[in-house]
Image (cartoon, rainbow, N blue to C red):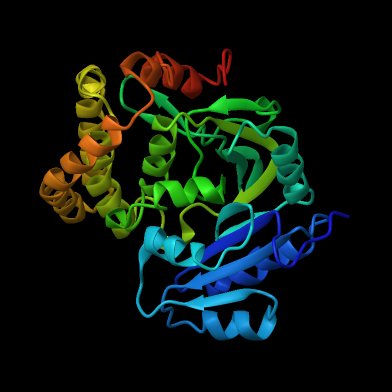
Length: 336
């Protein structure tokens, strides 16, 4: 068993919670039954009204509970929690997850074995069917699309590999790097703040290592009502375009524009079928309103980038459409 240094643990596990009391017993219990004990747990409660804070205080007194005065979102909640983290690395973990045995030991061993990496992505599996992937490291395509390999067989992801970004639902960052970056961008509030953080890291020359041994079961956006719920539609639409504008070089944006337009039309068709048109329209409106802010940030991010356009585009995969068609047919050759 790997034991903890209480004053400076290897990992600070940071969980942000908003009205997620139904998930906390399983999530937190899965942490305290791990073989690796070189960690602390910090939980930020975003002014929940379901008794979450009282439950944590009573059931898990070893958790450092931070109570926000209002709902700060995923970005703001994590930034608040970072102030209370003492670990060398911070493990951002969604509240609707359960770690499988050995996950923390796998992370700890990778941190020590690969000191050249300061960002790690976990293997997130679907809660109801762990044979399927929920996220296996974020992949970017030159079409502008993002893929975390959701729905792919988990058996395909048994090797460590570099990925473009780490999903914020189960991502590990070196704390000094987070301090350099200033944490998450709080204007995003929810969704795409994790990809923005990862891309800002990449602009500083950082790399991301995917760890298949760090297995996390994920209920999948349960805390926000699912990706197709009101919050998912609104913030997913609103934040996507500012994230691109902040981080993508101009020529790359032009290359991606046909795929971005296609994705927008596909998203519109989805909300027309399943509802949410009003939230989609609000998201587009507010994305436009965020353009001046994103443009100012873009000048700073790209102005300090260590990557030229070609190096940035080396993070991308080609042939998004071909791979999606192959996925529909159950053809997984060449994946990942």
